[in-house]
Image (spheres, protein in one colour):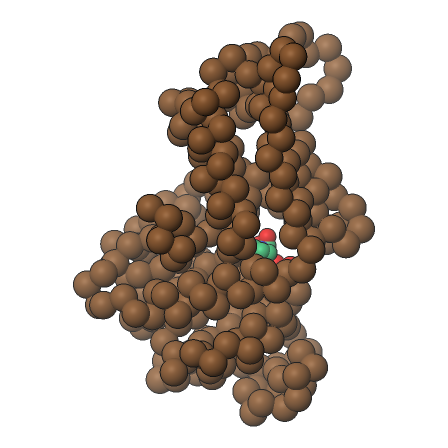
Length: 270
Ligand code: NAD
């Protein structure tokens, strides 16, 4: 049985991750943490989530997990995630990281952690989005040069970062397939007289509204035809199940199998 620690366990994703662990017979939840200022510190996480008491009390830090966990799952915010990452490296724990919105320096720290430990880091843990990335790579190689590429994403009103990590990952996959550098060709907003569209650009549009779980459409538009690849998530459980599946996968890695892996590795798509 793989012992799991969930940080940010009372967050939107945290609660569903607790449920996903409860439903997966290969794992057991041994540790749940929350922000040290949270009013829920000391509460039973099973009760908070609504699956009944499970005896796991919400702790203010991961320190209680030193003896009692194999893999940490983190869907929180960039700053606490980096501190959890450092804790995992120091304590030889594997990590499944789902937080989005990291800056370049933080992304470099994540890559560096992969030199001495194994972690899974994906902007989107759904199987459907992982498959969509494969389809986008193919579409970009066949349609890409000369067509206009736009990525449109929609998320709920509480999401704090934009564009979504998934939209950016989609942009990276397309840019790589076309030999472009996303940092040079991405256009994140348009207003006023901007002139004609630069044919090499990849455009991003972000909608924030209501309770939309997560929707992404990538448009490859030529003169006379266009292809749109769309993924719609209707429940956060799809991300949570993918994250728990990743935890089971990474827990089987040996001590010398270090690296930063993603859902394509977990699903054996490489
Ligand atoms: P949320 O705000 O509901 O939850 C974040 C939780 O982290 C909160 O409960 C907060 O109290 C807690 N937290 C903050 N600092 C902490 C600390 N130091 N220690 C422990 N807990 C701490 O947000 P959410 O909607 O659950 O999203 C969380 C992150 O996951 C976001 O970055 C979001 O974009 C990302 N996300 C990723 C995927 C994916 O598949 N990769 C899917 C959905 C959401």
